[in-house]
Image (cartoon, rainbow, N blue to C red; front, side):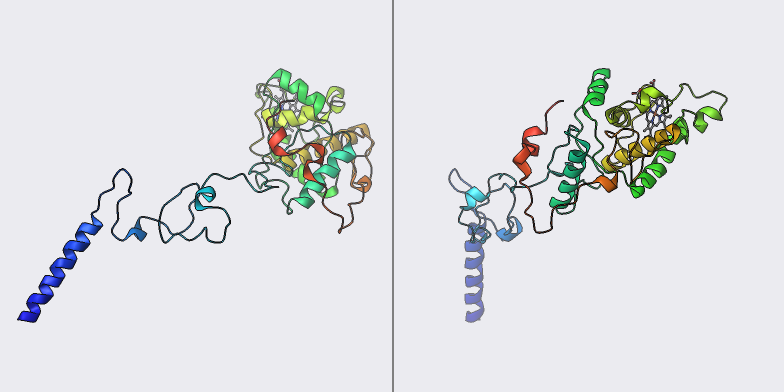
Length: 293
Ligand code: HEC
């Protein structure tokens, strides 16, 4: 009996001590105590949160204090933000076709193989206005992808799905939506074989794909960055066919500005050559991202 009584006293005492301890209230200078705190606090690192907790040890291997480590940090050098290409800026302004292609290929090579995000979104800063269209036409001149048989084949497939229905398989403006509906389609799609389009710089096409024009909607959400450029290559190849000149992997007799044939792409730098400094041209994303052109 005595033993049982003692046990009860010990139990009651520990329950009350434990109870008082676990209910200790938070005060001005204390966070209070919690019952089984592991359930409220993570022992793991939590971004931008400084939690005082004795079992947190994730900062042990750092020379920085836990407080410093808990502050928002700058991204590590060379970080490519989601949705940005290669060196994080695409402004369409290159000095030459060779430069455009070399720069695109370099980005692919030196960014861990991923130059463009899977959906191919690359910032486009020209506004959806007639002034924006004019500016894009003036400034975006060189196709950053070389003319390749594979690219033209992919461009053809995409063109026939997304553009040919209106602009026609030959790009003459006679797609089946216009042709087969007794002229019910409300607007005449541009005849891309017309001289004004054949001699228009690539920017006019890129801008039209981004935003459309009047009765034509935009295709920015249907075609990735690279796909848009391959569609433009394919349109150029249709124009070349109409003009009876070459536009292929081997030669471009239409206009040197429109595309660089694969055969003329400068040899890539030797494998052991160091990567060019990304910001040697001042093209890092943090400085040019928001620029308007
Ligand atoms: C639903 C029909 C339709 C589809 C599909 C379509 N277009 Fe158009 N497109 C038009 C019409 C209509 C115009 C004429 C707009 C105007 O000038 O009013 C036009 C105009 C254009 C122009 C000329 C813009 C300018 O600067 O004058 C280009 C370039 C063009 N389209 C390219 C494309 C490409 C590339 C695709 C496929 C990604 C495409 N279009 C898909 C109907 C279409």
